[in-house]
Amino acid sequence: MSTDKQAPRILARTFFTQLRASGYTPTQIIGIATELLDLVTEDIKGADKSVVPPTPDSQADFRREA
Image (cartoon, rainbow, N blue to C red):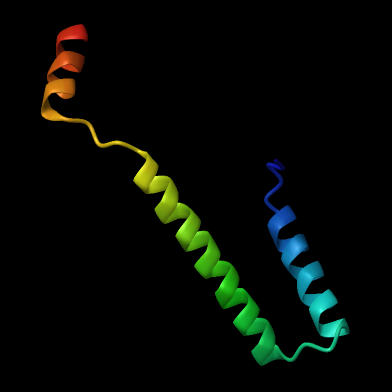
């Protein structure tokens, strides 16, 4: 994974240019961007569900170990 802060901007610009060159309208590109954001949102929600929240008992154990 790149740590270059310019990389996402370059990728987005390239993706946009390719879509426009393929004949997509600005409105269609907005639709694509919306779908991408929906996918990322669902992915994040799924990741949040896989994290089990600590129980009061497990927190007490942690405090005793510290």
